Image: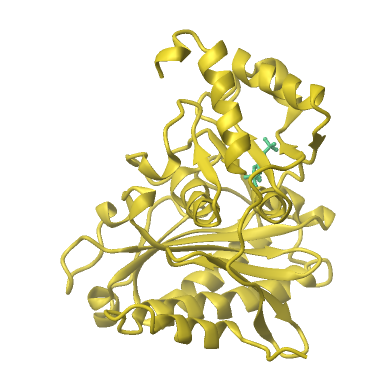
Length: 336
Ligand code: P6P
C-alpha cells in the first residue's frame, strides 16, 4: 500500500519549493483544512441536528441564508482569526469584510475571500455542496488594519485558491500557483490524504453544465452553443452546485456555463469568492475561464466585494469552441 501523504505533510513539503516562504501561507492553508473538517462533520449530520432549514435572514445578494451557511461562515472566520496569519476575511455571507484588529491580524500578510457553503439550495435535499476560498497578499500597510483594496485585487494576484467538496467523499483541492493537488478526507484518520496529485483537466469532455431553464433568456450565441452541444450528443450534467459541477469537469472534462441572461444581466456568480478562485484552479489544471465578453476571468478588475460575473469555465478546447460561437453570433463579435 502506498504511503499516505496528509495535507499538512504536503503543505509543509511544498513550502520548500518557495525559498522566500516563511510558513505563514502554510499555516493559513492548514487552518482552512481544519475548518473544513469541522464544517464537513456538520454537513454530514445536518439532518440530525436541527441545523437544516432557513436561518430566516437573507445574504447580501438576496439569497435565503440557511443555518448551515452561517455555521460554515462562523467556523471559517473563527479558525482564520486564530491562525494569526490572516488580516481580514470577505465572505458571501457578510455585507462587508471582517477586519482582524488584533496585533497578529494587523501584522498578518494575507487576506481571505470565501464562499463558506456554495450550493446552499442543495443542503436540505442532501445534494453535494462546497466551500470556495482564495488568498491574497495584502497591499495595505502592515501594522494597520486591512482595507477594502486588499480584497479588490484581480484574480491573477491570488497566491492560493481552493475548494472543499462535501460529496460522496469530502475532497479538498488547492493550488498555490504550481499545479493543483487534491486530498480526500479519511474519516478513520481525520486527515485529508493526497488522492489527486498534480491533476490536469482533460482538454475535451462530453459534459456541458448550464441551467437550460433559462434558455429563452440567454443571448443568441449561448442558445446556439447549447444547440451545438445537443447536436453533438454531449451530455447535460447540472447539479446546481458550482463546486460539484466544476469538480466533475476537472476530473472528466467538460464545460460549465453561468452566463448573463435577461433575469441576471451580469450572471449570478460572484467574481471575488466564486469565479476567481475556481478560475485559478481550473487554469492551473490546464483549463480556461472567461466571461461572455471573452475576457479572462482572472484579469477582471473588481470594483465591489459582491460583484457578479458571467463565467464560462472548463476544458480549454471546449471554452475555445464557445468563443467561436460568441464571435459568430454576437453583433460585431468578429471584433471582440
Ligand atoms: P441556478 C448555488 O446557489 C449557486 O450559487 C452555484 O453553486 C450554482 O452553480 C448556481 O448558484 C445555480 O444557480 O440559477 O441554476 O439555480
